[in-house]
Image (cartoon, rainbow, N blue to C red; front, side, top):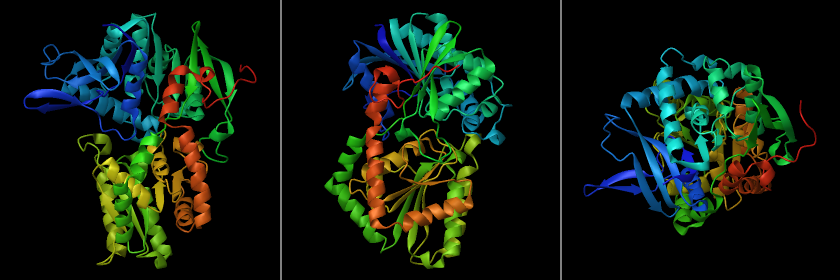
Length: 503
């Protein structure tokens, strides 16, 4: 059955589990809500489809149905599974996406690795995604493509289907022109994105960067520019923009550029935070600290997250302020990435060695400054830690958005707690009442965590109320409405009507 909406995303929209020799499909356990939010759009159309990949030893005879029909709380929709070999997945995702694209997207040119990239394989995989989307799409359907590992899909799909409406959303930063243009495939990528009807980004800076790249490589022209509203301007921070291009013209086509910061499911998190068992768990955590302040840091094991820099900041603080020894604890959650991926093979080891050295220097039989956790924490348990912590310490070197900071704020139904946030996280332009820090500056990092730990109760209360209002304003539902509707169709859009035309 053809579909009015086709979502193209590398992950399947469920978990496959075998029970009594039978395959069943269970909901993804996704705390940030992206997968269920995307599936919620299927309730708005007669029939939807989802395109993803699935591992197969032999793509010609994969041993599974390429297309399955799913019926769940979100409606009835098809899932087209592309059979890819282990080699194809490794080259497409682990090598090209993570070793070549990921460092460039986050501004780490020194970590960029061109040599192992199998570009023909990346093209082939993207072509197959485009073929599957074309096969599923009804005439005039919306095809919504997600993230950088599918950069070439829009261009291929436009060749196959002139009639469909193509939308693309970037879940990562989009870098400046001098960084992006390190990629030897830059023009091919940008030409593909310019085949879209809509291209979406989290914040104005990423949209502006994309336009600079497009204009450096093509004859694309900006035809509309809009003001950025005050609630998306954090004065003096690194990612703030005052205006943003919202339309491009290229090859007699108009491309709409959207700014829609992804949010969290505030209602769901608040509900979990208010549960009696969550309250009880949070009390137990606080009692176990014996009066010490708890700092919470949560992220993936990734060089972009600045985990080692953060640990070194704590070491400097304890060295300069010995009276704090025994008075603070850092719970540093760094979820291990796939150690088979070259891009991350040394990061976890460095974090473990640094944490071990600091615990060895300052720890006692009764107290250790750092509790290092390298596993994913169940979300309900994590919410209890959000409730118990005095400070959320979120200091990535680069981050498209950062939902942990927003989850922490949503969980603080008591309106207490402080947030230390890197100015290089996209969330910083919305969360202006956080203690903003520059993770590349030792002085800034050390002073920020000291400021948060010593903040008076009334200061924490005022900041947290403002942060909660900002997070509630741009929650996951608003993102879902804005990202497809376009700024001029949605009253909650993060840009305001044009005051002039841009040359």
